[in-house]
Amino acid sequence: MNISEGIVIENVLVWLIPGVTAITLHEYAHGWVAARLGDTTAREAGRLSLNPLRHVDPIGTIILPGLMLFANLPFIFGWAKPVPVNFQRLKGGRLGTFLVAIAGVVANLLMLLGWLIALYGLIGFGGGTSVPSPNPLIALFIKLSLAGVIINLALMLFNLIPLPPLDGGRVLGALLPEALSKPYMRLERYGIFILLALIATGAFRHVFDPLLNLFLSLLGLS
Image (cartoon, rainbow, N blue to C red; front, top):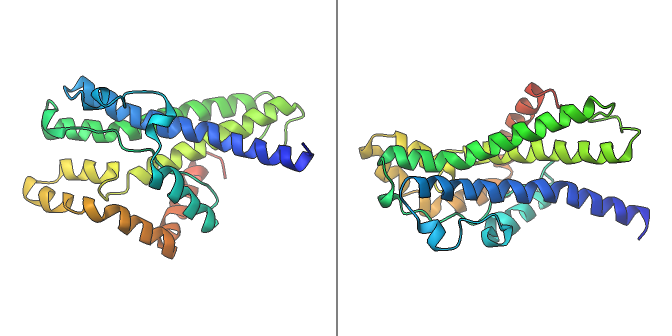
């Protein structure tokens, strides 16, 4: 294996490890909270699992990252196959729906904070996000931690988009008055196609990129 091949493999692993972890724990959080609120659908379907292979989604795990790569976005991310939830079985009614929907976002926020602490801890050993560390191992883990921050931030912001079937859509649906919530949630059958159209036309990037960069700047990473 030559140096260029090694760099490619390293870059893939640097993004793959936190990426797989982010989407797996995101979906696991949905199922875990649902189970605590009385719905065991995810457990019965074998989806209350930390095995990434149980959560692969053709669109979110394969097609969307491919489109983002084609659109030359500065990052690649996606989502896993949604964990099945029977919202009718949840305790707490609409509050239960809200808690299950927001659980994935909270999981990504916690992972983001974990990677951020690791990143600044590593920088404290003499590394940096732009200047390579003299220690190759520290430099590698700095890259890994930075990728973890970016992926979880991007996934968190992405899922907060108020468009069903994304988490933000379900959160908004749970907060809206019932008279508005029902017609709004009917968008769910079209939501993924609306999202893919926004990505394909570039409209998504014009809004999402500045937002992501704003938060990275607030974290001192841009």
